[in-house]
Figure (cartoon, rainbow, N blue to C red):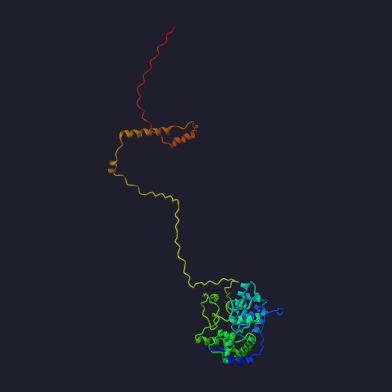
Length: 400
């Protein structure tokens, strides 16, 4: 037997109680526009998601005061958006991060921050485009289609389902997707707007009765589902989550009960996401211990020209005299060889003894100095000359 996630009788009782309520729904559009802008409805829906119309009105007023247009809100970082709406706003960082990515996705597709191009399209194309925006949740998509393009839908979030569970209207294990599907099936198109206003007033009343722990309504629903083994929560794709700043790869951070990566403080580090419209470089993960580089082998460069060898020092000790046996072993030169040696020595002596041609006459002092410095040569022994024969006396000439 199939159990419906909503008890129809109690749901009808709730509609009779809050059906005539007219909650003040904020808007961020300019007062002179003819029709509400799609981006303005998207921003308003993000402020109303898992919150109340009163809280959304205060957040929209802060955004109007701090920004000039939608494009300026798009380029703000998540931490700056949190500072505008207030750090105590319910699920402030998750809300700012999803809004930031949605606006940049629209800008990447249309090259401007606007959804006016959807007005000329059919409802099926409008719904497919809005539900396909990056990181959008069903409540925000349906609320944008209802406000900007008058679709007959009933937006449902986790806080509304938990408030209905507390009043016995919804099943304890009913998820947001199951309740949304039941609403689209049982609520007529003409009654969709009235049911939506009644649910907004009903959720705000449950939030006020919870007091300061009103933001815990969504957490209670998710904790109960996790204990029962049901995981039905919208998550940001892990490949699109930027690292927290400590070098942890994307998608590996531990998630908290809201399905978001744990942050070191209430004010997260301003690490921009990987968005095509504003590409930024992730910080590199530097390992704690860096291995030293391998030692480089030294290359010895040999000179091309060898250095001249230094002369060996002379020995101070005189060489020993050659023994007689060594002298006897030497062979004496032959007579013919001795004659050649004598002839060669005579030739060299003659060449040295030849005086220079036409030398200048030296002074007597120079000749005396030379004669004193040079040793006197020994007189050569002259060979004995033969006795000269006396010349014959010429015969006396006779007189005529």
